[in-house]
Length: 270
Image 1 (cartoon, rainbow, N blue to C red):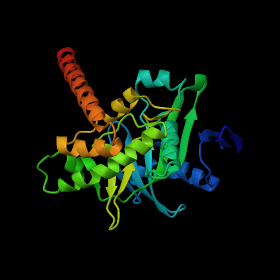
Image 2: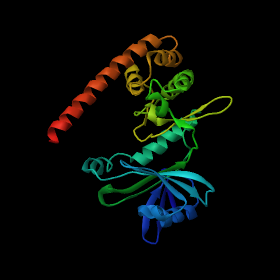
Image 3: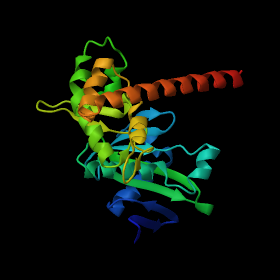
């Protein structure tokens, strides 16, 4: 193994991959033997969580002695084939944003490794992001999508904490870029609930965020007017009306764009 820009170049038995993490080489060999190329499907220690756009599976890992989550990114589109030759992979960006969140004291499943292989002309052949598995109580979307949910009060109580944490994220220059209720996991505790931010592969870290960038990151959050008021009062106590108004307008524009996109798809798919 040789270190290069925090990557580890791993070559053994005609396997040539890159890993971004400090991890036991024995675990890498174990991973490749038991989980790579869909070998996990017949493994009793594996539970498939999601298998559509990408693949997510939970594993009771014997070497690390903990539950881990492996995300395998699909690389089927020509667009992805081209762009990931010149920009970091989704797995690498997930790792970067996870580390940035942890560094400022925010919660995300702790990153373990990126394992990926590139071929000729830097073509990305496979890409995995591996993190700890969080045994959370519920996904915020489970309740937030239903305004009449019997436990809707839980969302209201989380708004002050959510507003302050997103402000902390933005002040650190971190843009999530897919910040909606479905990407926030809740772990309930007696003293204070923990919010875990997931699905980080679209994120970016910048030196400073403009109001426009903050507004664009906030516009995917869908809550009641009362909930949003509490959220923005905690996000920006002095300018909460400004952010509430701008985010509401940005959300309307986004909704119009999505509706138009769906109409065009339905026309061209006939």
